[in-house]
Image 1 (spheres, rainbow, N blue to C red):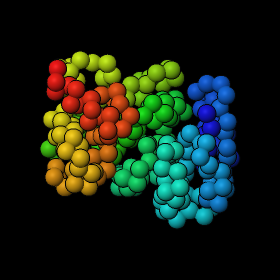
Image 2: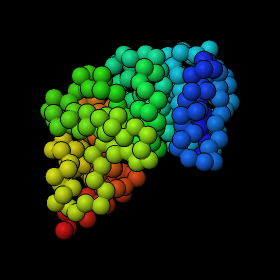
Image 3: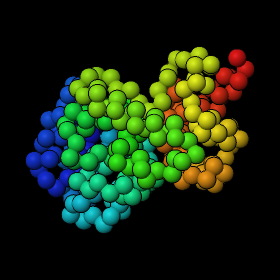
Image 4: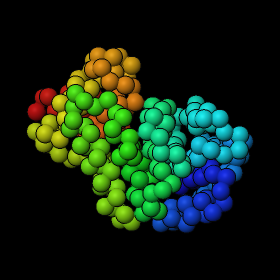
Length: 237
């Protein structure tokens, strides 16, 4: 596994490297102290990038967006000292898989990284109040539950993600998915893109992405096509 850590504070980088070494053997860490170094370090063989928002050469989220543009398959996590919910929302809507405030403990960071590596999305609890989840309070509860699970897991080797229910039967899966997630899945099955799903349900595209991450993990799938196939299989049982 290859992990890029982009932060201009050497002590932060060394602490992150030390903690993430617990993920296992054979990890290659690449350090970047500025945006130019970051963009040079990001290559197709990178599995994960933890990126600070405030570093030499940074202008808002532009460097994060550039990484996402160049290599959309790389899992990106923002590791930041800023705790503005709107900034978190903007980062998640840009496609990052998690936003970890630096104020959090190393154990929480490690568990959040494990969640992201397993295909989940880590959403800080302080962002919940800003999510437009009024039509489905259960979704807010799910995100809260996922956050609590990340904290509880600490240094364990397995992290429970948002709405995880891999291997459940159809009735059990229907009980795990919220009504709003079922609505998202129905529109997904019709081939609608995120923009139309958000418009139809009156939610933001960022919230749609969070719902999709939950659905993928609940169905044990990796992408939209597999989710539709799994959903149609459920309907036939």
